[in-house]
Length: 133
Image (cartoon, rainbow, N blue to C red):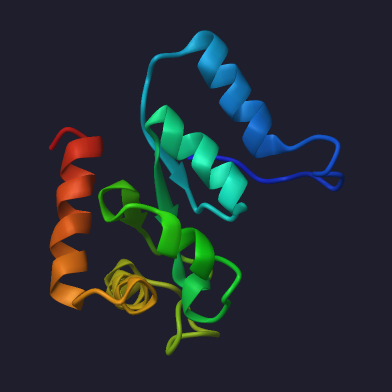
């Protein structure tokens, strides 16, 4: 699981591309990009390398990642709450809890225009595959 954030000057030093470059040079391990908050181009790099992208409650109150989610194959998406922070709508301002992941799944389904039950089953299958459960 990768936890990556851009620094102050992410135009010159892109943390996502830096991490991907290191992985390509030194690793054959596949995994998940925790709390993905990057662009379509950054997403494509990780997806092409075989990593899944994990989305949080941020997607329930920001449209910044809608296009990334729309363009990411369902079998390459994971959901999370990143508890105790970044509670999804309708729990904004409260302590985030793992059970709120259902709101993230609901929003992914809405963005991708898929039935919520289909998305939930796919994301469970993805977690089992990625974490070898």
